[in-house]
Amino acid sequence: DVAGKVIVLESPGGAVDAGLALGRAFRRLNVTVTVGQTVMLPPDASGEQRASYSPKAICASMCPFVLLGGARRHVPPEARILVHQIWPGAARADSTAAIYAAQHVAGLLRATSEIARYTVDMGGEIELFDLSMRIPPWEDLRVLTNIEVQRTRLNTIDTPFPSSDTEVSAPPGVLPPTGGQIVIGGEDMALTPPNKRPTNMVFQSYAVFPHMTVADNVAY
Figure 1 (cartoon, rainbow, N blue to C red):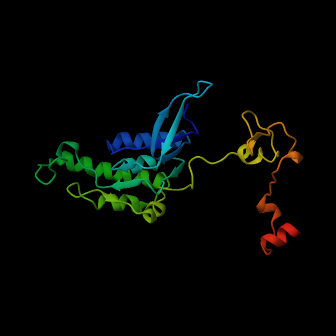
Figure 2 (figure 1 turned 30 degrees about the horizontal axis):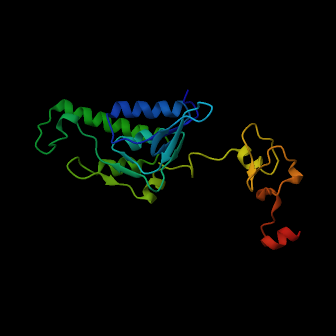
Figure 3 (figure 1 turned 90 degrees about the vertical axis):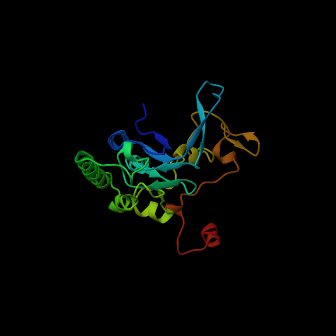
């Protein structure tokens, strides 16, 4: 079950219909989508499967539109987003010399219209569609800048793997841990009373006065 989970995406692209269908499935499943690579690691002691994540990856052609389907989207600075026009697969190898029938033209118009509508439906900026349609298949794919990635709303969150409240609140004893260890200075303090731990926790949005310095807040 991938509903609500994080999907790590790397792809050179693919068919328009399949890409749009996958993006819509991501949205229905309320998943977070990020660009990167996963490397499977040996299972841990409990047998649970593990993997490492690398942000160095490429998302090209239809891949950015699949990414747009994520309910939450993250493009790390190390990743590269590349776009270009869609084109009939059979003519892509030598697009300037190919002969195109009327059905090819009609198919391209239908597909571009669907991509434009999909972009808007998914909450993206139409600039993403415009940038893609300006690059013909006989030119190199266009790399989006970090500013363009933000502006087209391919990136909507700062991190795909946010810390949970338990991870923040368990070390000082605000919440009890449900498992594992709380190691501070090499000592497991999971069972140590909060007032005996060398930690403190301050909810800044509630407890810190913005008009005072750090020293004044502590003194107060």
